[in-house]
Image 1 (cartoon, helix red, strand yellow):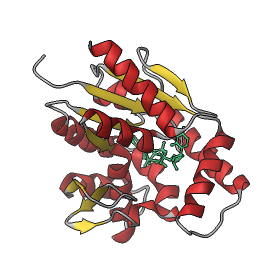
Image 2 (cartoon, helix red, strand yellow):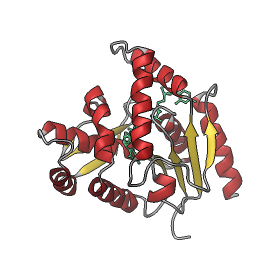
Image 3 (cartoon, protein in one colour):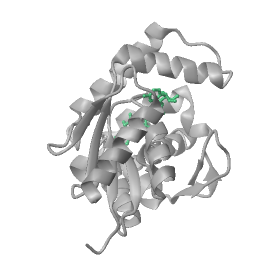
Image 4 (cartoon, rainbow, N blue to C red):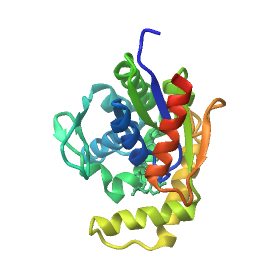
Length: 228
Ligand code: CDP
Ligand code: CDP
């Protein structure tokens, strides 16, 4: 092979993809690629420029002209800094507003085409852990390791609530979190262009009751078995 291995991790919101992907990447010395951050950055830019989320032409133009960068950072809270058109949006892309609009932007084929192309360029040499919704099924279909990471809606809502608590952010009820998560699952799984789905050759890990480190360890074991 003329490239290093790729680990693809897909799954619904709050399943632990980012946390686990980061741990696996650090442990194995691979680059971590957060593709969700790219969809969020485009959403942030559209909102900031006052472009209607359903104006597909304007959004297509926006995505084809913008420059997205992901750079490593020392900050443990957000080990990757996210930039769009040279603006640091690391924090700004995590707001409730962006979260509630991102699935509508991510359903647009022009957006997916542009971002997937960028991801494939970055992944050309391999050596990465890429995380998202369509990585194993579409972005890197020949990835050596494909993981479909899930957890129940209530478990995922609970994790999100704990994240807010840790960050000292205002409390959101479990019911509201469950509703938001279920709604985003529905939009991501039912869209026409590369919906969230388990690739045929992916391994499913149901993570209820498992810690992020336990999940990361399972993936590392599997990686070492497969590649030895
Ligand atoms: O971290 P969280 O699960 O909340 O979401 P994310 O990974 O940051 O992704 C945000 C949104 O981007 C998802 O709900 C999808 O709509 C979209 N997305 C996608 O369509 N394809 C990807 N490969 C990654 C994210
Ligand atoms: O990226 P995704 O939306 O799939 O999840 P995340 O942003 O990594 O958030 C998952 C949250 O649940 C983090 O606070 C993790 O520490 C925690 N968690 C986990 O990721 N995996 C587990 N097995 C258990 C908890």
